Image 1: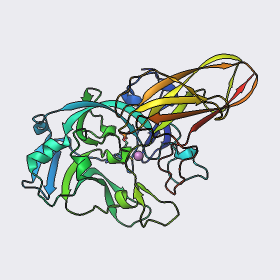
Image 2: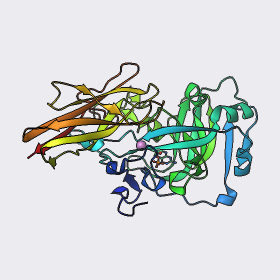
Image 3: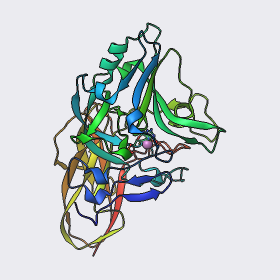
Image 4: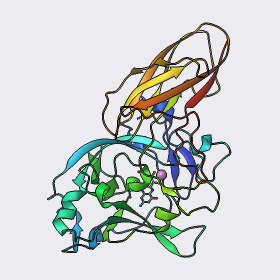
Length: 349
Ligand SMILES: Nc1nc2c(c(=O)[nH]1)N[C@H]1C(S)=C(S)[C@@H](COP(=O)(O)O)O[C@H]1N2
Ligand SMILES: [Mo]
């Protein structure tokens, strides 16, 4: 662990820090560099009293102790978690919120219980439509009076997907406190807001959940105040970033190995193309990592910069279903889902 490499601070309270892209030399993000996204101060609770309550439209409401969780089957899945606000700071005009640059994203191997086993254990009633997840962290919002826990729901279909897990371990070790110990949800393929940390309660609902983190945040609002009909944020959009050279770099003439990372949702990224000339011509980059669902892939590209001058490099990823990055992602009030083709301007001397 190199003490010179650390998370980049975006806000102190709540703690929001991004992964330093320059440290992208491992496929799995080391724990101390995994980005941190919080809406509230960290929750204070007594771990000896922790249990998971499961209630609502179920046959048998239960309270599960930490020690009971080991009796359920476990799976391990590598999953990239990306915050919906990643690259918000790259939108023009600016969108309000944490001004994330490229690093509100990280990758880990998560181990836990496929949620469906726990739902089968309690038995869903036939009117069940959504599953609500509540975190222990609670606080105020600037737009509504009162206190709210961080809580979000999933449609039943996504909740019972075999890869939606109640994670206990990250990279083979129990979750760290900051990342949701003792138990968090991991929803592969969806933006990070769905992966509720510090779970304390799961409620089976028979009507849509309307909490503020569901209906005011994480929806696509195209004009200020226009919440009606706003589409909820779900799947991660196909995306890619330059790590080297970063924007506004000065380099000498010669051969440079350009590199970066690409990722997507359920359909894995299949192709990354780089343009040396502002998007007129595109060439395939080479992969450094295998194609695995839900996991980011590092790529590299050999660039022969023979002439001095200013270059606008572009990178664009395409997934197996043919979805590709747009030149400009749709601007929205809350600044979500920025998957515009990434640009890096480089000066060659
Ligand atoms: N309880 C709780 N869960 C949460 C959040 C939160 O503030 N509280 N933030 C969400 C968001 S927006 C993201 S992007 C991810 C970030 O997970 P990380 O902090 O482990 O990187 O957690 C999600 N789960
Ligand atoms: Mo997020």
